[in-house]
Length: 141
Image (cartoon, rainbow, N blue to C red; front, side):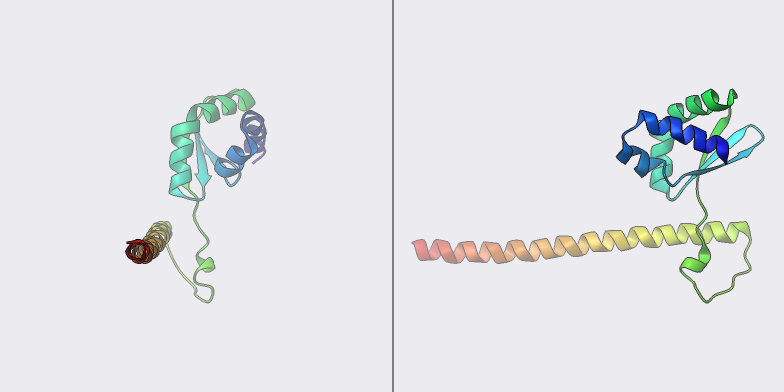
């Protein structure tokens, strides 16, 4: 949508490149009646945009269009074939939303598991270092 590209150009001029790339680069919009729905790839980005940039977005949209729109933030639907390449689905929008939510939960759990694995490795390394320290202290005595 050309209007959103104009909004993004103005916003990019006001933010650092890393901030813009992190929060706005993968966004898209849909305009329906008086509501501008902003789509982003995940819930974290949606929350950040809504909490940190709502006012900037609303003001920039008004500057570009001359209109006041209600803003709505939503996670973009993911392509189901990306995780089920050989499957065919007949699904309603509600099914797609449920699957997307479940995929996000799986991603979060995988991330938490990796963090726990990393912590376990750190604990093991700390134990090894404590043993070495004990041995060295005994040698010093």
